[in-house]
Image 1 (cartoon, rainbow, N blue to C red):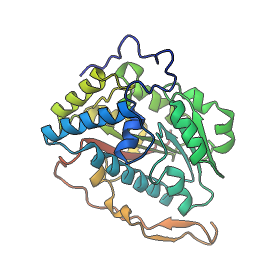
Image 2 (tube, rainbow, N blue to C red):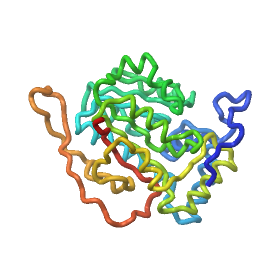
Image 3 (cartoon, helix red, strand yellow):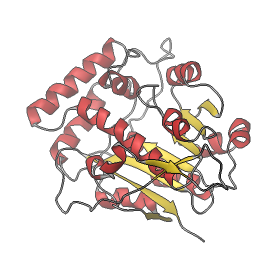
Image 4 (cartoon, helix red, strand yellow):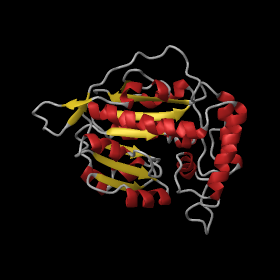
Length: 305
């Protein structure tokens, strides 16, 4: 699998929204039964569906829905640990249970920054995901200072308090040459110990042949991003400087399935009457490799210096 981008990946003149070729965010939206997609996206989605069907691997739609459920559980977990501010990087088009909806149903004062480079994503997010404690930012996460140095971000988030950094299904859209590990490291260095890193990433661990095939399809059909699966060791490197919480680096179905129906309780009186919390129960991690998916995921807590 190539780790190098093509010589030129710039948008074509006259196509500022990139609707001539498939777009990863819009294809994801289609798999989630959204309406913010175009014919090239739907054709690409159909091609991937057929490829996966022939290879006997999990369908993209099942994977997309599973990942949204994972996002909900991960945000619930971080809320249960006391996090009240989140940086959702590569957030994609608004769809089912967005980060601020999950967070603010439990903690009305939770604050969320959505970041995406895609102008269509940014405009839709601004229109549909506004409100108190929420901002959307069109920026390139590969240049973390575009996010970390933004005045709106600095005004909304208190970087002296823990932040939940979220990279759900986005790091596999970065080429190795773009140093996704360095990108994560820069965001890590901007937050205090006790902050969280939540991520999921396509892996070569369970469906290596299919991973290569879908990568090649992104190149043949001129998707706006690659889909680069990585090994467990490569994914583990994203957590340098973090301690993985139980159950560690696992498939989405194995990551705290008990939080699908979280039990909510109250914090102590010193926090306020309206601050719900989670009774977190840590499940025993499965010792078997789950071949029903090809993502690995986990949450890490930033270590003390």
